[in-house]
Length: 202
Image 1 (cartoon, helix red, strand yellow):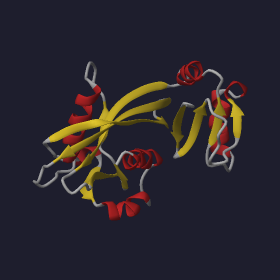
Image 2 (cartoon, rainbow, N blue to C red):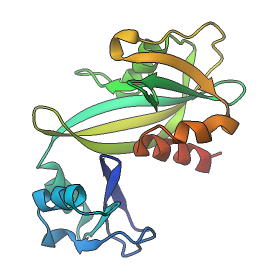
Image 3 (cartoon, one colour):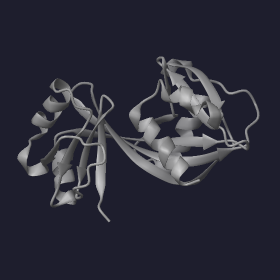
Image 4 (tube, rainbow, N blue to C red):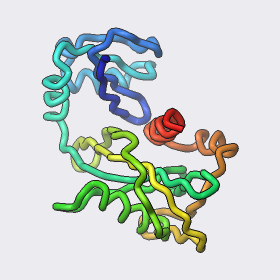
């Protein structure tokens, strides 16, 4: 089975893969033919929705790709309640899932629960399983890659949720499945990827 990494840059994916399959018809290049700056330049200056990089040695090429960036590790959760609604936060005008940086010597699962509790004012969280790891590049004192480890969680918490306003969160809500399309109109591509992964595992 072909493996791949999907890294978002302003919601446009860089797909690094050992497969030649190209479902989205993105421009395709050999990983070895492009350097890191050229890849970013193409996404920024050309009218393309993504780029596919084929790799003969995925593990080696992925490590080479990471060498261009400072990796920031984070963890978060897709939380469902007893009605199987999904917990979303509204941060800086965009719907998101709760997540945050992993502290030094902190376990990924511990960080995921802590961040969800802090950002949403929720308790009684139980991790059901690991969902996916997402990647996105952002500029802040240089280019950084946020590597976020996502966990499927459940909570039977019934009290009022409290958004962590100091983190720019102004709303926390469990969203019904029938209303997820409205969330999709104003969220990030990697959040859609997390939710789509959850749906595949239903």
